[in-house]
Image (cartoon, rainbow, N blue to C red):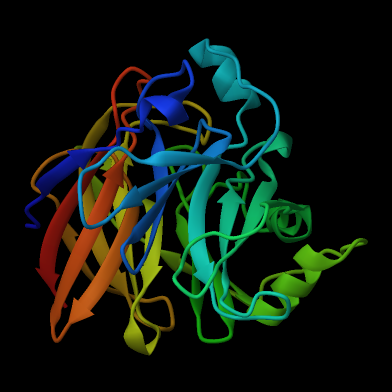
Length: 305
């Protein structure tokens, strides 16, 4: 069993809040670059930026124009549902790489993404570039009765997306694309649809009759991947449900499940970062509170590989 240690709540400064709650609640994806921690939240139009080294309040970077409704029902209907964020290594026009934030694709208005250029220190530079992810997400309807992308990683020359299953719409899967093909499609003014090169399925079992479903992932050396999963009692990608447990797993470079370890508390973990030190993984994990009044939390944990 993996033991969680609480580090902090995802509070933001008063200046960044601007009249909204002074925290991120629905943290859904995590990337750490040096001492900077980037957090996407699925019910926000902003990216959260925090320091790994201290517990000072973070700040926000706007990703999309406009404002979301304050009521939970209307907000859920209109949100972009950014569920994943990953680091892209250097490519044309981005000499220090970029961050790619990814919408879930579970509704037509959830097929947006954002590209954010980085400087040599891992800090965001330049303006966010909004992306239409339809060329990647729409073709997945041929393979999944309900698309719900919750994680994204770059492994070698591939972009790998993680499909989250649920009680009503199938299982978890790792979806593989050639990275250069995906980037070309996203950069094109007239993008064409692209199909994955491979799909592998992951059966994670269940807790208390609720299937474990992937919520985020991070790349490991050698092509392996570590992922978070929760047992959320819901039958689709739109409705929330009670979280009865959570786990962290490792998949090999071909997408086969290698290990799965339950977390000691049933927090709804939706973002994961990993650092490998010999045979030990040092993890950072963020939570989705499913309640706008409750801050998301940052936890640490360690586990053997």
